[in-house]
Image (cartoon, rainbow, N blue to C red; front, side, top):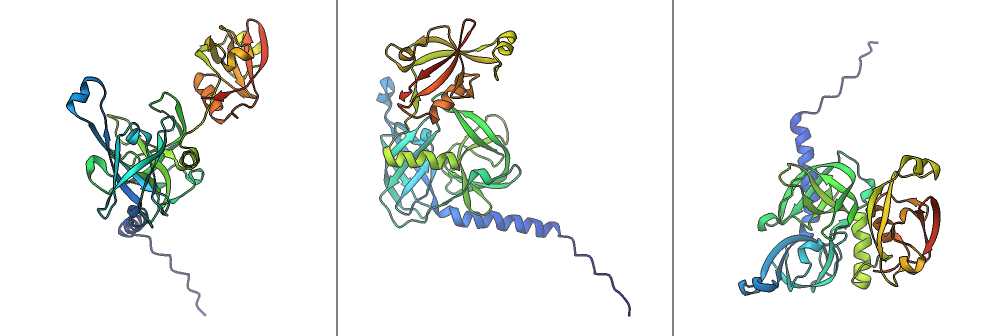
Length: 327
């Protein structure tokens, strides 16, 4: 009996690979496209500009509940006098602002329409660098424009228009343009994994999206109460480097801290005994090396719940109890 070796499997052709890629993109667009909307806003101009009429703007968003709740960027709808939403099939609806959060550049609006086909929200923790992603939006008013690329990096930080850092931002090379803001960033399985928010000009292929896990948390609070409550301790500070011998002597995990420049009268810092010149280097057992670190920890701190600051005052290392208040 003659033995015959198994024939090697034929190598995938370039055409087959591109066909698979195309099917992935088309499948994701078919799932999410019906939920992507165009948002047009009218903003009343202040001062002398008011004599030139009202400002107009536009952006994107996507429906994420069957009863017409839409996720978008804060900078698309913040301060808008009127908001109108155009659906992919051409229907136009007046929208109301449920709430917006400039600190994460996210907002929720609602239209009176149902039942709608919502986008499916995914899990941004499960994505990997190099993963295929699709951006859908309305750049320059061209409705339902699709671009594709990959996740370029994870865990970026992006400064919002309010000055705070947005953490765990996704970087992608899927092309974004003005008008894409607020649209979904979609994985190949059709799950929305991010909210497109910004690009770096004049760079090519450096674009950012707010991770959908952040968006789900913020959207839930906006729907519940219309705003996001963050901790506030009532101090002004600046980042300062620490002397090496001070770091070694106190066994610190940071080489810089936040020097207190001023404390507000009757604010939490004043009541806790913080003084001008103190240097904050820790918050509830977490190292503090900058103002951004302090903002980040206060975002997750309990309001009216006791926390602890680690402070350098002269040669002393102090632990000061403080109770953040609602900002």
